[in-house]
Image 1 (cartoon, rainbow, N blue to C red):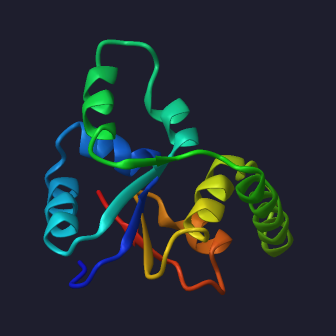
Image 2 (spheres, one colour; image 1 turned 45 degrees about the vertical axis):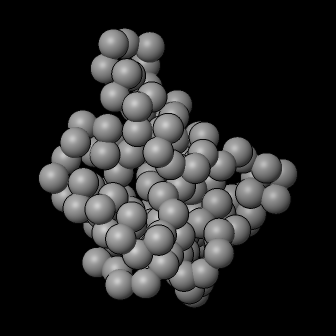
Amino acid sequence: MIVRPQSILLDAEALSALASADRRMQAWATVARRTDSILYASTVTLAEVTDGSPRDANVHRVVKAIRLLEVTAEVGYGAGRLRATAARRRKPRDLTVDAIVAATAMTLPDPVVVLTSDPGDLRLLLAGSTVRVEQVD
């Protein structure tokens, strides 16, 4: 966990967990409030966590308490560079959404932590950066 203000970026799994009142994500939200940290999510994650069903209401509820970040040209170009670098390190596969999340993390005020249930791809994309990736599940 954290003890001082941080930028906390939620990927799709973390946002879903927060929306479903997952105990571990609730703990992160509490720590964020106590440390004056800011919870963020990229708007691209909304496409991964919503489907037009009634369960989207929980996502709408938690999104009101976090800062949504749009995918800018800077983030788009950064994501492309990160994806290309990652593809050189291992067998290529589609990392576009994770690359957008990673590039978004790199635009946030330091220190930055990304919360995810699958840290492998984000750690690969953020290798060499100061962004910390934490697993939540």
